[in-house]
Image 1 (cartoon, helix red, strand yellow):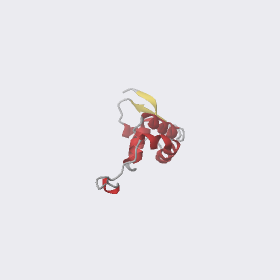
Image 2 (spheres, one colour):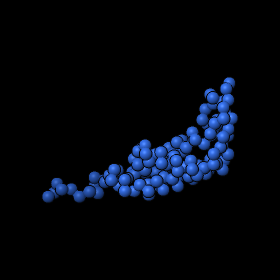
Image 3 (cartoon, helix red, strand yellow):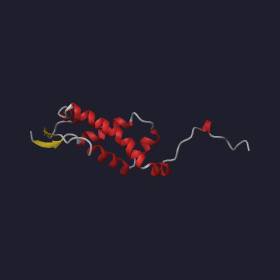
Length: 116
């Protein structure tokens, strides 16, 4: 089997972003980070705040096997950076989010014009 030196954190970033977003409401979080530009900003934010961790891995090894090679403090920092980044990127882009992701109202909470 062929082995190579790999950045072990990079493949975990998108996985951790998905896990974190699952804990947030759909509006505006999922809709905002469905935008590729905001998603890349978030990944960049996270990667700039997490130590790089390289390891010698086999080409055919699955991601979960490689995750074990990442020290626990780095994994914890990665999770924290993702949550911090979600808030920071949304705050930085709040005008874009409010203009491009309309707020959804519950039908029963919106007054009806049907009654005149």
